Image (cartoon, rainbow, N blue to C red):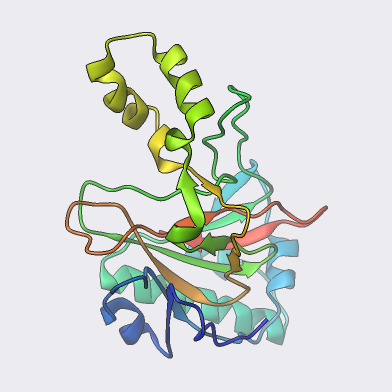
Length: 232
């Protein structure tokens, strides 16, 4: 796959952090990529971190406590710098060592976990920042290549049966249970993998946003492999 992403209709490509946070979303562009080819041994960092739960948050102090090779130290400096850049920007980045996310298997006709294509929603003007340093990377998909699951007739009918309440409260029921955030790819959809090392800014659903929110999903993890993921 091309490392530029420049031919993708929903992606803007930048070459630095300042551009990443200052480039405006517009038209169909609701994902901005700081395209990077990182050096350093991120696998060494993952091998020396301790997984306490399926998702374990890793602090800067945890990273600094690791005894690393020269290449491992180079990878650590990149992560620490990313955390500092985002913190100085006013974001609250989290570095996660991840075995897997919790699965939603409550209903057999609709999934609302992060492995399902979905958008993020916020009551305030914000964006999602995302970088996978190691392991499987997330996917995004253009908005015109997906359909909101709650608009698929058979799913909507089952949700109405599940609601079993006044019709005027149905839309609120969908929002309160996050059903409206999830999307089904169309048969010809072509998801785009975000790849390792790139720092992404994805549009979120909030009142001041001028573009459609970015539809994305967490990847299925590779067998026997943890992910190292920065997100905020």
